[in-house]
Image (cartoon, rainbow, N blue to C red):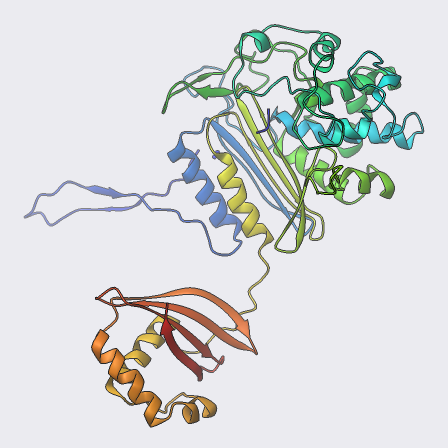
Length: 484
């Protein structure tokens, strides 16, 4: 269960050849590329085009950056466009979020802990004494996926078993009694079974159906107007009030995806919500509006296993450090739907991507946008002069001649580039000839300078690496070449 966007396609103006040539009008389709810096408009255009090219039925995306809404749009349809009740998808349309639901289940249980009605360290024997290891498996083990209970949903499609309705307690007895995969806390292994147990514990302790508890304690307080739990459906094709999910028919085609039977999703994946509502949820969670500091810390703390290793999973959330930044997140997948939610607590940044297709890679698009949303403003100074590649080509040509011109060279570099050193460069560069290609491999700031690391490829296959250091006024402080 765990594991985009109608293209705003602006066709370039068509052109007509001269009347003499009589050539037909040709429409030129622009190619959208992922921006190198965060730009909401360019990102939306890129995602819309990618979603159309990849054949998504519908997709929603929302970005909150530095605590403020930055991007929100929908692409495509809630149902395949050939169906009469299809409607345009917007970021306010609820879709199934699959295992992203797990963080709601954990938050609900931790609210009960705040109320003093249970403790995360309670053993499951308090509610299910007949389960294997009931006296050692804790609620925290279930939330952390360290219980050892076998996962009931290990495949990526609805098999005959999952198509039939089941009572949650029957599911629990079937998958949590008998042989376990490992002893509690010994390892991390994703288990939807554990979250079904958690959902039932919430119901037993609160005295309310899980959906009612989620609505009263989480959805409504956060302002999630579209959120619901296991909404009733009317056969395979929904009645138009809700979107329908799709799955792969073969390599290219798609078909309506049959839903899981009633009772299989429960606390593991039963929530429906829109991208905008998930953005509200993420902000409320990061800002501590739902859980007190103690329980929020527990929810977002990676589990230490019995051997001392870290699992990178807290309670319903992956918890990772990416380039020194703590990132919370989760993906979700149930029949016909896929979801991605990423949060960066320090910067209050959120990216949500929802799709009503389980087989297309919205995850790649999501990760690309997360990377841009996290990107800090560049510290590399702007240089008044040529682009690094053009500057490097000129310097290589001058070195090949045996005398680099003193214009725009830093004083220390001029002293360093003695006639002997220039002669040594010249002999080798004359042998290699003019470079076939010069590319910037990377750039950074150092000492207030633009530092460009270059890769020069020559006709005989020789590759040289170059380092070009320039001040904002264009002064070249360093240009050195070495073999790759």
